[in-house]
Length: 337
Image (cartoon, rainbow, N blue to C red):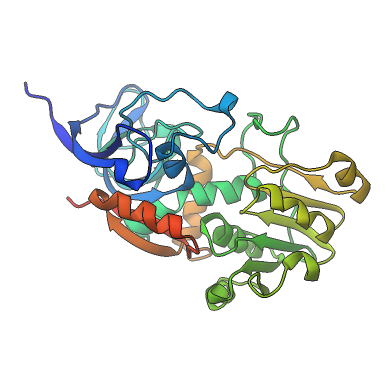
């Protein structure tokens, strides 16, 4: 019997967007605990271009060995095509979405079909189209695990202690840096869902968008340095992170917390003297948490915004869009039947 094939976008070498190649590849088959999904849309995330670049953003000692060629991608939404052994919860025809096999680079969602661990999937909300569903998993789970519930006991490679979300509610004030991006705009909405007052930091072009999502105050970082105007914060969710994240330490009240999504370097003595906490975690695939997010997306409590969409065959253009920055929401690849 001839091998069934499908289209996928893969990397045969590392480099810029032009190394992404759309080609025919063998169609995967689900093993025990997996389902085969006919992909309708794919969420584009930073790990996709980190992989394309050869993971140079990671410390050398933490880089996993990647065998080329490799198919990028972690997030997708689609329809179950076939079910492997030991998967009673899904059937062919079910609409599902998920973040697959993360942390890691074996999601392989830049494809017409993908095998997915059933534990990484949730049913797509009926009122949510595949484009919006595909945009949600990594950004939504990152915000959820930082702010609401970690949901696992795996240690972060960047800190010794277990990450613990800060209780949020009326009377707490949260600053979200990078609030218009994928994690930021969902984190803003989750904090508002819990009743917190939210200060959103982004360029002024995003102010109307952020106000519509519920931001109580918007700081245009192109005009005002947020660390100079924000004070007595309970929590800073810094979705930009990196070395500059330390500037937010002095915006916190004693007992406050700084959650940089991308690790930076902090002076332990300064953190202790200020009486604050710095904590980071590594987002992990989690179907049950995604189902909780799905309920909030389905009833309109939170929404995921779409910056732009591109056909799967034009994934290189999507990566170029990401490189230009100032993204409002998420970039998504669409997969035609």
